[in-house]
Image (cartoon, rainbow, N blue to C red; front, side):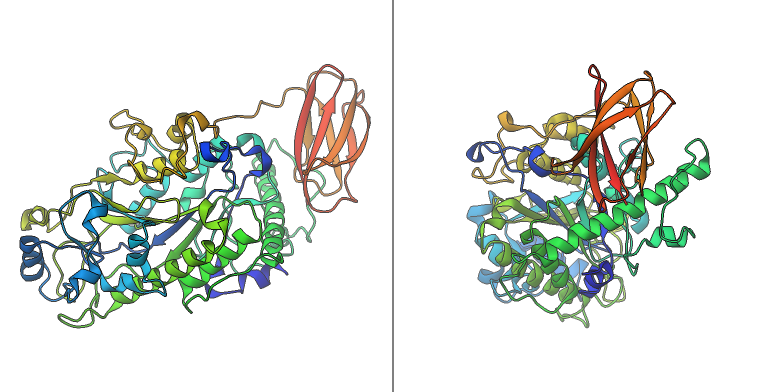
Length: 552
């Protein structure tokens, strides 16, 4: 199947953000009940794009707060609760006596949607999520979330993404790879969070692109990279980046296609006919097809509900209800799919949005940009319940423009908790992704308690996902990379005859021989090899190096 065909599988798969890294047998994460090996674990991020209205998603239901909410703040767009017993959270799971009610739309799905997941102990509500100095611009807040910042300065993330930094630090010795560690669906813009600090080719959109060397064709290179690229000029560096991106794109596309077409790559349940469901359906199929991707991101847009959040006064139907219906039903089907076999033991999903909405409705049956909003974390490994207290509606007044401002959970706490308690990352790896520069504090010191069930929790003795930066190239240089036909090997310190072995990425030896570097270089013919990742082992009897080479 060509990449173009894969992209056309559904409207949701219009864009894939691809992110190079490698897991394989080398990735040893942690769980004491699983001999500290949870290498198949995956995270699914669901972006609620536009700023989800938390107050109409989870209703703080107590006598005073509800009356205040209905009569003062939202007389036209409040959610009427006609069946409290069916909508209310189970107080035995919350650790609080405060009543909290699900929007009725969150019961949508064959297994009762989000409410059903909650009652089954597979969904945790995280109240009042945000960051210290909330920015209510879509563009700025999206960037702050993606880079791991707090709104006070750009010291935490600057121009790179926290997920990119996390993967780059944890798997630096495995780059490059022959499959993507991150896949993004449902958006034409690759999430900044995947953009690493040093590996700038870690994210790629392929929307509408033909699989046949689209970058090199655009560059007028006739589908074939040049055998020699000047590396000491700006032009040469840019050209090398384009060549490398093209090679990655085709290699990753093959990995995705192989997983999608694998005989085991099937869905076990029926999904709703919606865009988000199509995205999650594809994610489940790729997972079951055996691809070793660790992070998936899908998107559902439309949450910027300035107008017609409800279709008329005191009518629950409207844009927001439709969006929550789609979200609940799609997640319901996805969880049922992955839980039909052992796949569900290795997957945690979560929702996030760049900000919430104001407590006060506007004049268009909608809400304007706010600050905090709830997050949902779901899956078989998740300890169901509620973290945090109901929002304090007294906080929203005319003096603060009707905003709910108190952050109970910094979004970085949540991701840090999953990195360590579910994936097994060491403190240093988490700190490299994001660190509280304002308070000079690590987020591993302030994790969400009891987010992961004891049966899936990673014990501290099993933290093995750690920083392992590769050594700098000191003895021999290999270029170009990616290579089309001839790989050049240049001595950097010693002009001598060396031994080489050419290996496939799976360890199978393809050929071996000698290179005489007395003239300043040697060559290895790779023209007959298929596209993919290879390892060149070089040794002069005293010094050895391994080079990872992409064959385009």
